[in-house]
Image (cartoon, rainbow, N blue to C red; front, side):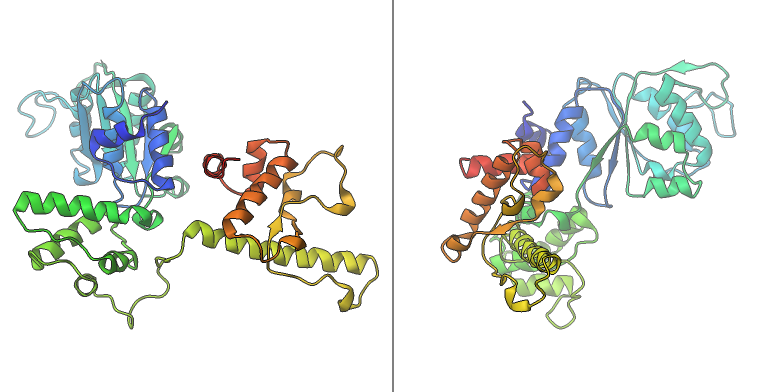
Length: 397
């Protein structure tokens, strides 16, 4: 069993949304191995924290974790910084120096912004990954190192490969396991947790009275797009707390700081919806099933030669159940997952069931259709198996 809370506590990761749980589950599965990991995600989303979580929960956790920002090292000295150099190998090399890889021996090295590495250094990195061998600048002998490699980037490395800016062989070697860190706008349900954590940490550290954020202030945060992700959120929270020292933070304070209002708000940006996102998604799916069924009915009538529109069964935006077609109910035929998307109306239930009851019955019908095969059921419903398991437990199916 993977202890997600233990992984969170090891480095202070915050998040209870499905997106964060999926990411943390993957971290738990790969941490105690030596497999290379590529962490991808937007700038400021927390890639370094994920790398630290992998190291802290690995068998190398008592050894060093060396963090290297490849974008911050000038290209002229990056080889020396990574692999070390011999005394006198170049001007200014007054003594032998160990590189980051040698310093990380027996531990983990994290190369942040690996897409910034010069092309010629990429070949040497590939050699370290494949054989654990490297040479210091100015030396001819080969050195061995035992190190686990974790890399991260906010670039599209596949596009970099297509543009001949990144080695294809290195790309596939790094991408053995890919952990994607969701951007903040992908898990707004966790935003209030970040606000609480960052606020308490900052006010305690700086001895500032903290009276909290109003619910409308939190809602204002959710209307913003957060291009800088969690890093930007942290900076904004700290700025607001300093400027409004000791006050309860209101919606107007947040809007003023983020320079948002109802007039100039960019309507193309993602916005927070007050309703449950799962419920809204289900309603959209049900509507699409209605339209699909209308098309199927019209097609059937056309094939049967009934062109009179009055003979077509009227559409009713009520309950859609995953029932097999009455005219093609053959239990001996193999079930096609794609066929399950065509649903029938249960006329005697119209107006009598809640959305939760609708969902429960839909799941039960799909399970029955696929002989309780959960994988096929999840695929037909276009949800993950984990989400299906949660629904089964929630509805006691």
